[in-house]
Length: 358
Image (cartoon, rainbow, N blue to C red; front, top):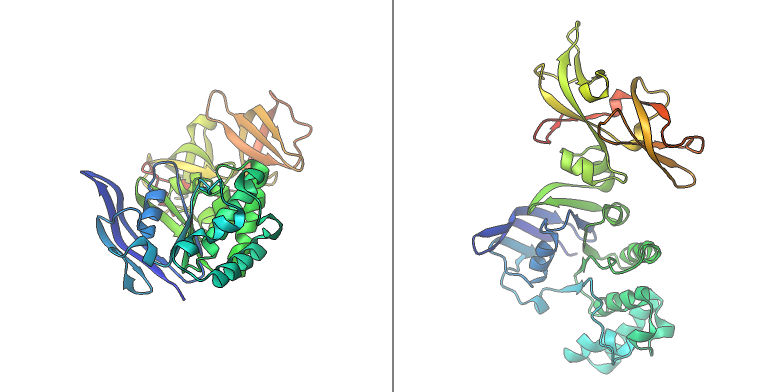
């Protein structure tokens, strides 16, 4: 059983700190996804785990053994990169077994491991082909097979699907999820694509600027984000953010008034919120329902028809776009005025700094 722990891990280049004190526990068999915008430090953190980047300070342990100064080849880790990095003059069989041959593993054992990995990845008929004879998805499976034959404790994936087209990415996501179940492996996976994170992960680590913003299961992060950044990053289309200000009702109730939307008031149920406090109201596109008690009068700018559902992009006057999911979008057209309703219980409230108010 392989467990990995990061304790106050930091990485600096000269005086510039790119990883700013990460604490993280990864349990045996978990599929953990590091997600965040470009430059947030997710790939750097993965490379530190692999031993390809030095840890400036803090501790990395695998199964309670300190790994900071252990050679990458001795960490029990296999990494799959964004680039397939296959040897063009070698066959699939030779590419998959190369690291084992280099390590002096007996030929019979290499054949056995390559055969097992090929069976798992359905590469059997392709073993004697060379990379130029393979599709992008097949090349990526060979790269994954090259990692599997090493029997690592932990698999690391660094944006492995970013070079594939949309259809292949969906197919490979399914393949990687199936592989995780079949091998019961511990996997750490880096992506900037939150859809990949939501569909693959047992646990998501959301990063920004070298800091972990929140850790949790995909639906926990979706339903209960800790701050506005996580709320906006997780979910597609992203959450709508409406600017408001706190007001007190005659009976002591607490409301958020939306000046840019005709002064609509939303009951928010906050305790101790001072009248006049600026806030941001978050509402997801799918939470607009006909039975909602709060209504926004909007004009449609654009419609995105996806067959079974439609996303309407609308605004009040010259305000920000609001994205609304509807199942009845076929009768709508650009320029239509609509009333979008939602239940205030679905709304999230954030302060000026983006912190969630509860």
